[in-house]
Image (tube, rainbow over all chains, first blue to last red; front, side):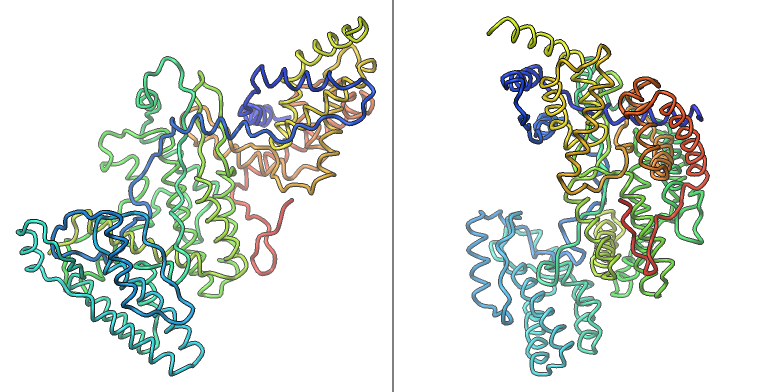
Amino acid sequence: MNPDAFDVLRAADPAVTMPHPTPDEDERLRRAIVSTPPDAQKPPARRRSRRRIALFASLAGAVILLGGTGVYAANYFLDPITKGPHPPISAEQQKADYEKWTQQIPLPAGAHWQSVPDDVQGFPGHLDVVFEAMGHWTREWMAAAKAGDDGRVATAESWVDRLRATIPTITDEDTAKAFRTVYGTESMSGLDEGGAGYFDDAIAKAKAGDFDQLKRLVLGMASPCVGPRPPRRPRPQYWVGLMSSGYQSDDDMNRDYTISGAEAWAEFASVVRTVGVPAGMDASGVRLADPDYAFKQEAVEKYAKYGRPTSPLPPPITPHDQLTGPASPENHQTFGGGFEMAFDDLWAIWWREWAAGAKAGSRERVAAAAAATARLDALLPHTETHYTQAHELRVITWTLPPQQKHDLERLSAQARAGDMRGIQAWLDFQVWNAWNNLDAGGYYVK
Amino acid sequence: MDGERQRREERFTLLYDAHKSAIRAYAWRRGPDTADDVVAETFMVAWQRLDDVPVDPLPWLIGVARNVRLNLLRGERRRHERDAHCASEDAVPSFAGEVEARAALRAALQRLSEGDREIVLLAAWERLDGQALAAVLGCSRTAAAVRLFRARRRLAAAMAEAEAEPCRPFPTDARGRLLDES
């Protein structure tokens, strides 16, 4: 036998991750066994232990999440701006405000108001309510158009128009004035001029029968009204627990896991080789494009279209250069950084390919994307955290949060069955996210 | 407690203390969810049949655990579980080698027959020799040795093949849907 294969097999021994029962647990089992008469036939089944869950809980405090930037943002790409800073309001006040507005705006038959958002922002709820209603009426509009019911179409269209009319457009001058005031008490939230133009354009297209832009808008603004909110972008997490006594903190331990750019690139490239890239891409990964660049480009183009020039985007940077090149002058990476980046990039690349392949009716491209997604999924095969007790009691493993993994597997399964809506919604959200990041990153020139 | 019962319990306790970790590891490697059940039932069988336990008890216990596990699998609907939890362990910086080795290993193990996979893993993970393998599998030592030799050769070939084709597509049907590999 190839000794390397045998070494790999032994190195992959799952028992390394096995949590050991406590002496008390061992003793309880022994007593349970010997308490039975020797001729008893039925052994006492000890049903599945939940020890791992307990271990999970005990280690949860030691979790380190890497790569928190660029994830699914809680704010949306047409981020409404407010006339001025408001004094924070209480949850009760917010709830009252939300309820006041919901009583004034009707919804289509069968639609219901969502509950007040949990993440109290401290702002009155007028715009939340308007967007939520807009979502319901847009869904009604699309359904009526599909059913060819002109009466319902007219009603829905009229309500979308009326709702849009309630959203003020806030000029730069308004904003400047408001910021010179001290905590205005009124709620005058609205959209900036670029956002308002985009919104109006979406409504105009919907009236012409093209709902795509409006649907994407309300999906971002009030996604529960038009479908399930897209799942978070998958990000492997780096779990650390059971630190060696030689470390005083997680930071101490992480310093020990600093790797070079070349090592991080090796991680990245290994995932690329294992998972593969769509036909026509650079299979070595060296020249693999930044998969988010297209999203950013689209966002910049949208700003430009609505008269909001932005500073030019810097040229795309390849993952190779990002990890090893001048953009990383210290050539200083963290253990697993390349792995995480590859996972993130390849997932985006392959799901774009999946959507494009489905749109083009290419069975081969769809099959390749489904297979690559399965390979990515298999790199992080567990739905719960496992622990590796090794390397001087440092416990290191990768996982996806269970809900993210569940969402991704669910959307993949839907897509394999021919339903691309989930993956498309996920992709759409990356555009909104890119828009947000651009704004936050200072590219937006007012 | 009478004397005979006490001596029996002492013998069992020695057996239990000496081998519980190995049996648990055996069971965990093949199914973490059922590991506790397999351990409990294996040692219950040992307690019931203490007089049958041979001088070298580990292969015998593994054989019992193997049967217990197979019974559990028959009793429940077989869980879809890709072979071995090869991709869960990380202990050294840089995943580069790990990622590729695991992918190839998983692919190679999937290409082996159930019988080949079992004997290779017993040899690799439980580190059983020919005599012990024979005891676990209920065959002659010669038969175990021949089976192991062939299985190792096939694993080496499967590994080489998997390493040469790291991007082998997962099997799909005509509509491009992934096929269940279980």
